[in-house]
Amino acid sequence: MPKKAEAPASFESALQQLEQIVSRLESGELPLEQALNEFEHGVQLARTGQQTLQQAEQRVQILLSEEKDAALAPFTPENE
Image 1 (cartoon, rainbow, N blue to C red):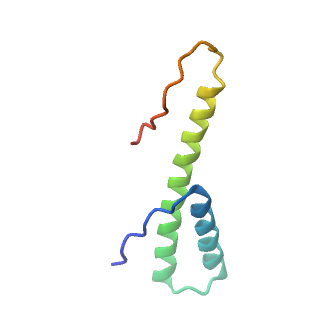
Image 2: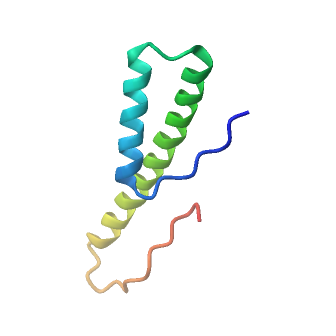
């Protein structure tokens, strides 16, 4: 059983890893088991990236809120 990969340090590094996985999968040269492992890791990276983007969007919406007198508070993601 392959060991769990560590989460990438940043959104950008996760995106770079995902692009590399896509390239390897598109090459068609990986054995089936390795391709499945790469695909699984890619799905995990994509989900993590999606969550990061959603949190960033929420932060932007808060900052652009119409309520100019609203008190600013630190943003706390729902998933943490």
